[in-house]
Length: 318
Image 1 (tube, rainbow, N blue to C red):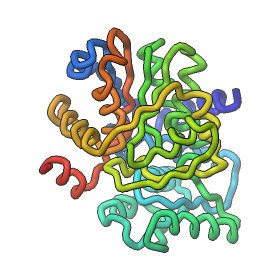
Image 2: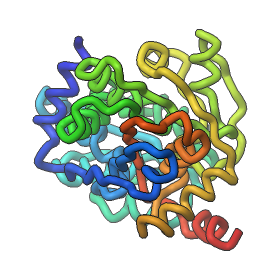
Image 3: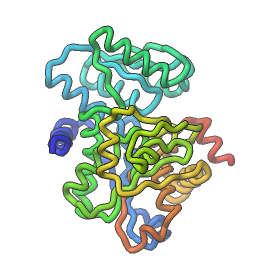
Image 4: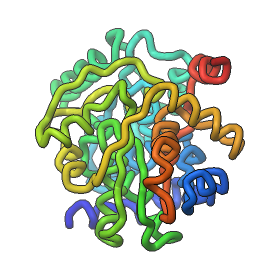
C-alpha cells in the first residue's frame, strides 16, 4: 500500500512538469500478432526517457522535506540526464559523477543543465562506488536510478496514464534493468487490474533480474556488451526492486542482440520513430512470440529514444 500511495502522490507532484506521453495503436504490431497492441511512447518524454519521472519526483520530495543536503548521482545515461534536468528545473544544486570515458554526446547533454559534473574512474561501477562513498562522507544524498521508493513511484506514474486510456489491458511489457520501471508500473497496474500480465523484457547479454527472480534469490550474472545499454548491468543485492519483481512480474522474455537491432529498424520503418536499444528489447519481445499475444490487448512501454550515433550507425548499416 505504501508504494501505491507514493505513486499517486508522485502523479500529482510531477504531472505539470513531465509529458503525459502518447499511447498509440500500432497497426503493424497488431496485425503481426493478431491482437491489439499499443505503444506507450516514453521515447517522447522530456530528456528522451522515462527516467525524467523518477528523478523529478525524488528531487521534488527532497524540496518538500526541506532537506538541504546536496543530491548527487552517478550515471552516464538517461538517469543522469533526468537528474540534471530536474535539478535545473527546481533550482537545486546537484552533482553528477561520470567516468572519464563517458560518451561525449551524453556528457554534453548533461552539461546543458545547471549541475556540477565530476569525473572519476573509467567504468560505471567504479564511478558509482566513488559517488556513494563521497556522498556518505559528506552527508550528501545519493539518488539511485532504481533502488529508491520515490524513484520507483515516479516511474509508476506511467501505469496511471496507461490505465486512464486502457482500463484492463491483458499484458504490459517493459524492459528491466535495475527494475525501477517495471516495479512502479506493475505495482499500480496489478492493484487496478489484477488479471493484467506484467512481462519483463531483458537482453540475453544482461539478464541478472530474470535469472535472480527465477532462482528466488539474488544471483550475480556477468553482463556482456549489449545494444540495450540503458538496461545493462545488474542490480544491488538489497534493492527494493528485487522483491517487487518477484511479486509483480508474471513472466520474463530474453532477447538477442540481433532481435534488438531488428526491432529498432522496424520502429523506424513502421512508425518513423527512433528508439534506443532498451526500448527495442520490449518491442522485440512481442515480435519473438506473436502467438502469445494473439486475441489480446497489449501495451509495450517504449522506454526511451537516446541511442548513440555509433550504435545507431551499427544497427542501420548491419
